[in-house]
Image (cartoon, rainbow, N blue to C red; front, side, top):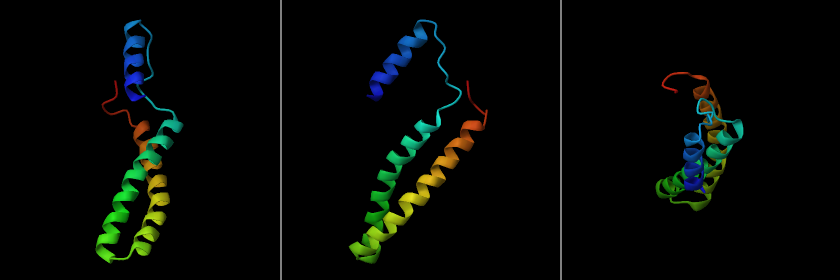
Length: 88
């Protein structure tokens, strides 16, 4: 899927169509936040379980941080999208 998008993007650029590389749509930031949070939350749960020795505590910590960190990531991503530095 990602490779198809890269190939399609390259073909579109070759045909002279201009791709909007300066910004991303908010939905893309949301999906990226959710996929990253899955990875991050599993990591947090494993570390919490290792430190506390309690699976229920690890699941509690992970379930709280998954929401807060998605919100923080989304905001961070949208702010960076507004910054013009190093964009083409």
